[in-house]
Image 1 (cartoon, rainbow, N blue to C red):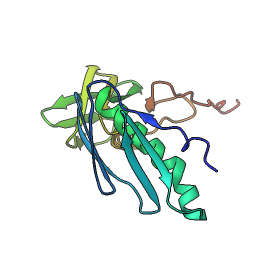
Image 2 (cartoon, rainbow, N blue to C red):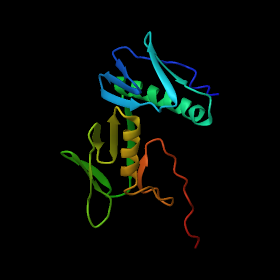
Image 3 (cartoon, one colour):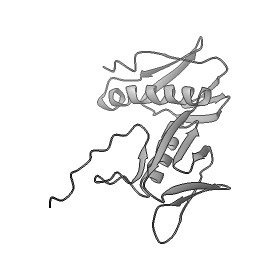
Length: 177
């Protein structure tokens, strides 16, 4: 039995939730998001709470129950408050800049890397070595952050590259003389 799935998700103040069949639509200050619940589960909207329950007791519905409830929770929190992810750039000469709807990364390659910013994502570059990614969709924010980090992941000897601001890099010792 899912312990997470049993708890109903409260609808935050200022968020409108619509339920049409298996599609849940949430609209709030940060935008509008949709989620299609799998057919093995039923979803109910009653007295400002969204409840997800399995239709039958089989392995697939039990395994999807907690995940779908968490996706509903992320959806409601995303349209209310949004999600942010911070990236730090370490290394001499490595920097980032915004060029309209493109993030331009100078990572020490022979060319600059241009990353087009997807719809629904807002990127701020406070300093040339600090990138802030924000948006309503948690999955999309995390994916954009992972894509940008993958341009030049931090290396273990000097820590040069792009890392998450809360990431701890395991450092290796250099060569012995």
